[in-house]
Amino acid sequence: MSADAALARVLAAIEGPTEAEWVHLADALGRVAAAPLTSTTDLPPWDNSAMDGYAIRSSDVAGASESAPVLLWVTGDVGAGTDPGDVAVARGSAVRIATGARLPAGADAVVPVELTTPADAAGGVVGSRGRALEGPAPVAVLVHAAVGAGGSIRRRGNDLQAGQAVIEAAMEIRPAAVAIAAGAGHDGLLVHRRPVVGIMATGDEIRRPGSDLGAAGIPDANGPALQALVADAGGDPRNLGVAADRLDDVRARLCAGLAEQPDAIVVSGGVSVGPYDHVRAIFAELGDVDLWRVAVQPGKPFAFGTAARPGGGAPVLLFGLPGNPVSTFVTFELFVRPALRRLGGHRRLARPVERGILVDETPKSEGRRAFVRVRAERDERDAIVRDAGGRPVVRLVGGVAGQGSHVLSALAGADGLAVIPEDVDVHPAGGEVDVWWLDRG
Ligand code: AMP
Ligand code: MG
Image 1 (cartoon, rainbow, N blue to C red):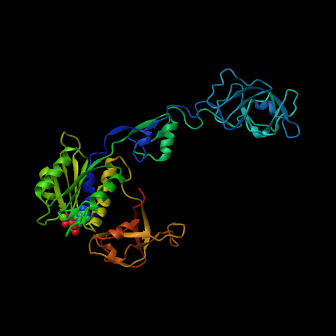
Image 2: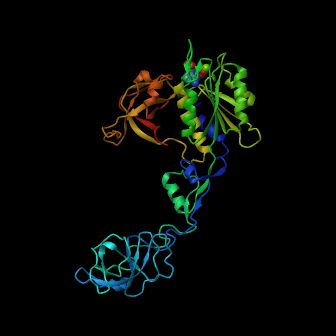
Image 3: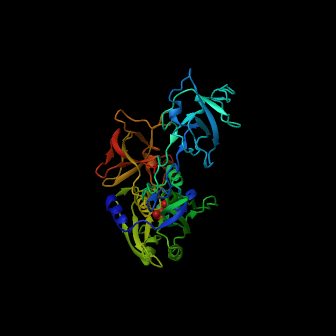
């Protein structure tokens, strides 16, 4: 089966995104909006001042200049967060105002404090020009420049109008979306529930990382990796532990996992047709499952199916990934991550892809689409080096030997996967490839 056909089959098994739930803005980062969000308010909610200064009538200062300043009586003082009430600006007067304070009635402009000098009733200077707005307001102020109507005023609704859409459905919540949701008067919003994903590693040789390996053990790389991959894809990972290579243990753990009503279960290892490979048999007890020989490298074999959700609802997706850690990782990228993103409500399922130059000659197996671990060349500022055509320049991590499906060191050094198509047997040095950026959502 081709990689594209396999992905299409996986996606076809998904009925749609998870249901909506309300989350507080503090928990919204990275979630996907399940409904449009509209502003509860005009923003600003009232005309306000963009500067520290004096609210005035622009006609009063039309003739003001450095050589002929205009004297205005200061009849009030409005701080940010203060209702001006019946404080109003009458002809020939000014009201001291702070940035963000509501504009008093009668004013049509704000003159910045830098263009004024505090004065006494006779027009005598009593402080320095542009003095910071501290202490009590002066009785009068000299204005040294004309200010046009509307000057330094932010009008009500100039940013947002009540009822205006601020977040579209299916938009991923980034920090700026948190800012506008809050500015629009919301303390939370509806997002898709994180897909719940049960994760199980398998193998009699697999040991908890950090524990004694004994004579023939190897640390569990896939369990922790899958938890991180699921979380990174927007899912909620649930650990089903490491199953021994026995039917009863695989069955007990998968049944317990299914009882948690997950959206998907992802198993690593035990999926081939060897005498110790029980995952497919238990998947088949739980639901409908196929073993696919997907034409990808690394990766085959790969089991996929669905099981009825206990208690009803959308079927549970069952993924059996090959056990070699790099195969687990790559097949997750290819088939599980897009599925979790669709469940989570994302519109774009794939990683950002760019056309790049793979410097190294790279052999691969015939007829399979290879996903090789590469790293972009970077300059001293850590910016990606590009060729004259703007294409990123990438190299195999760990050389050709690093491409073994067990080589975690090369995987860990990679920031991308370069795709070598099925019909290429040896990628020529310096040839073009698609690069999937693993460090970008
Ligand atoms: P399997 O798919 O079960 O035949 O496993 C293939 C290879 O991957 C074997 O060398 C396993 O030891 C190794 N492997 C399987 N699961 C894990 C795991 N959780 N962590 C590290 N290596 C694993
Ligand atoms: Mg195994």
